[in-house]
Image (cartoon, rainbow, N blue to C red; front, side, top):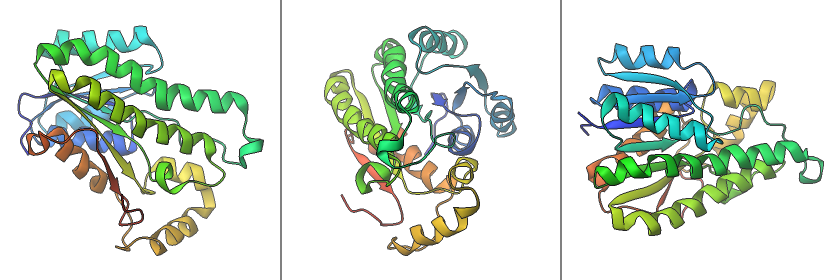
Length: 252
């Protein structure tokens, strides 16, 4: 998969999965823009180390103005936009509890980032993708959306909405040759996973593995492979789909 001269935006790129997506695209020749509310300096260094051109932007995906500024900066620096990876999401910072104990403000914040953020970013990049006569959008959902995560209804619901948004966008944007797909990972070995489960992390991973057909823990590069496929011309007639990268936990 060669992404030479392709321009890629990765949101939520300051660390973890987002940083790995940026690394893998850069390794294959793309011009990579790392966006996050967090500082993306480390990710930009990763991109440049791979010998690629890159840009780091502070972006609030819930803001129409901020996402428009993001798209304008990318077009201004690199001339267009080919690929958008909607990775930004609330996860590691969330409080997990029975659904009737969840905080209303945290519920609203989860929907704002995890769902509205995708809507805002897609709106922002649409003009540039239409100028290119096509593009690929990859939304990051979760196994939680199909399996159901107990004590995490806010996160589960938001990631189920990502799948619905992916299907609706695919129908709307197909006429512009823009493909929209989703990747739904199982528990991945990242900092955010450690923040969620704390000292129960190892136990959670053991339980997760026991439910997988292939009993190997998921690493960031495992998810990146599916994202690269959906961004590439190898999947040029694939749209509206959700690929589960979960070691064989849920079969769709």
